[in-house]
Amino acid sequence: MHDLLAYAKAKQGDLIAFLRELVECESPSDDAAAVAQFMELMAARISDIGRVKLTKPGKFGPNLVCEFSLPGPRSKEGRILALGHGDTVWPIGTLSHMPWRERDGRLWGPGVFDMKAGLAQFVFAMRGLRELGIPVRRRVILQVNSDEEVGSDGSRPLTEKNARESVAVLVLEPSAGLDGKLKTARKGVGDYKVRITGRAAHSGLDFTAGASAIVELARQVEQIAGFTDLERGVTVNPGVIRGGTRTNVIAGEAEVEVDMRVARARDAAVLDRKFRALKVFDKRCRIEVSGGMNRPPLERSAGVVKLFRHAQKVAAELGAELEETSVGGGSDGNFTAGLGVPTLDGLGAVGEGAHAANESVLTSRLADRVALQANLVASL
Image (tube, rainbow, N blue to C red; front, side):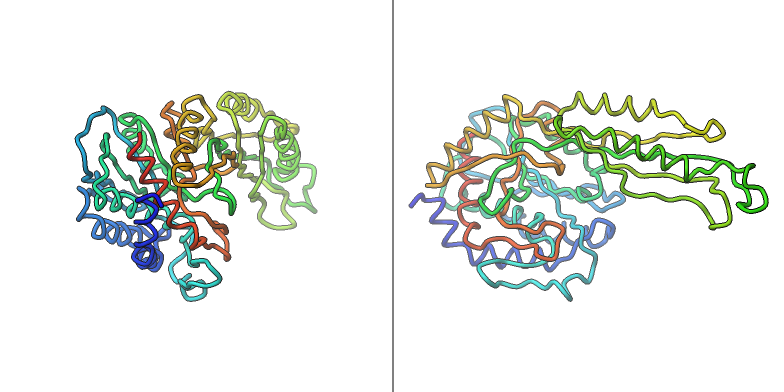
């Protein structure tokens, strides 16, 4: 058995205990104090193996950056950035009905899959390199963001700064599917808001004086939904609609919030032009369009493919096979790939149920993922 894999198997009980601590420290994005408590817990648990810094807390709490103290002289320039997030979609109190538990060959709990297991695994991967004395040729940085689930507005500048100084980014988000596929492509994500201003009037006494913002918006929504182009990987979803005040009042205002996703950066520009070119059908109404891209797509570039092929080779040394896939959801890896930095996503836990009540990770896949992360870092 490979030394790193043997180490990970021997330390699996300690890893699970650490992961339980992380899961039971609830950290919803919209609770800055809870996120800060999680980051402080992480800092306390890894300060013995690296230099840890918590950034100044923003709206969603601080981000964590750790440079690990690893064996071997730094013989290569550039560094490796491991990227993750500590915030979850689960509100405080979720543990009361989704408690931490070990059952049916899985570990369960809010945030265990997305993505606290990935963080715990990487910490033990670094411990393995240290305890086995395996030399690492580059500096290794772990960045844990506080606001990934709500768009990463606060952490994005730090992510991009650290990525620009790195030769590779390893994203510790969970893998795709129960066979543990890595993610070599992710769609870019954007949000638009289309607001209609009409003319309010009494629907019985003065119907013809009104210009319904709701009727106008309905026409716009049909047109917006038509921007979807499945063959090109473009999806446009009018997800939330608001408008009107009372049933006997012709609506003076209405708006729709739209989620858009693209597989290629050039399609985002095309889509943006379509949104900006929207015109009202009823000339008595006004239209206002705001928003745009939030995350660029993680495209399957030559650099991404080269990094994936290297990971496949490393996995083979551990007796494992790696496959790749593309997914519709975004991560902070979208930002790093958008800068042209080779980025490999989905290196975290194998399991299922992100953002769902069945969120869980496979216990049998903890050790091989730790060994993969460690071996990948040592070989880059």
